[in-house]
Length: 75
Image (cartoon, rainbow, N blue to C red; front, side):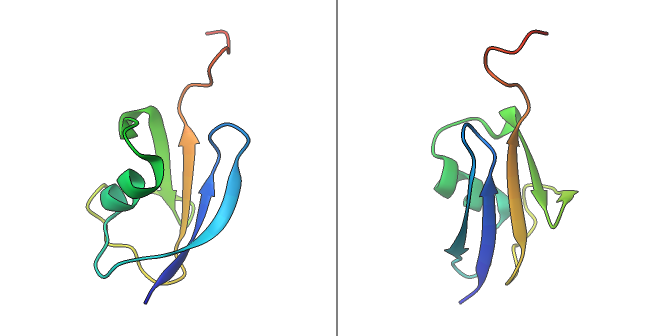
């Protein structure tokens, strides 16, 4: 079973290792980890590079989720 490092920079932020099901895509992973929030509100990177939603994750990938807008920040 593949394992990835998930870095969530939403709110206080955290990092944890997560086991993947076979052929899991970035989009599936995001929905599993983040729930019903819109992916368009986040920058999603794998191994420090922006990726497409249908990219299949691999063992030892590093997934980073960063909010595009920070609540309460001035525009």
